[in-house]
Amino acid sequence: MGNGNAERFFTDSEKERIRQAVQAAELSTAGEIATMIVDESDRYLESELAGSLFLAALLALAVAAATHHVTIWSYIPMVVILYLPSRLLFDKFPRLKIPFAGRARISDAVRLRAVRAFYEKGLYRTRHETGILIFMSLLEHKVWILGDRGINERIDPSSWEEMAAGLAKGIAEGKGCDALCSVIERCGSELSRHFPRRVDDVNELRDSLII
Image (cartoon, rainbow, N blue to C red; front, side):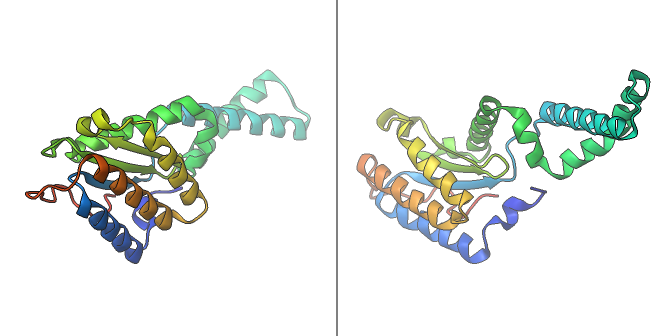
């Protein structure tokens, strides 16, 4: 996936549907729901380097075998020559890095990026600490749902995992907007049970998708 995927992932009409879904979900709760989508959560530079070196070594071996000229003195320079084109390929197609990153590394990267976004976008500043972030990272095909302290005191954070998995599955199947709107509705329903809307409630976070 190249640059700009997050910007184009949802159409304008889908972005409006998402905004309206957030607005509707917040009508019955003091909780604040924010949605965010990013191209990737990390550069995975170490995976890019390892993958490029692996590809260059593999290609050099193929060239050496095809030319019947396999010696250490020709093989190593060939790896060096092929490394840069391999690196450019990994840079152009970031998805190639994922197999070299490892499941734990990817999961940690998405979680940390979601936490960073939570603070960067000021979700921790809500009056009753009831902000929640639905974070989607396209490169990794992962979703993280993160609640503020007030929410985590009442709702077990693990309860969001099933919703996050369902949303990730919907995105992978090309039903991202429907899946996201469904999760927004379910989040609103869950929040309304623990944090019903107050008389003096105000909308503290933007309802539109953050990109």
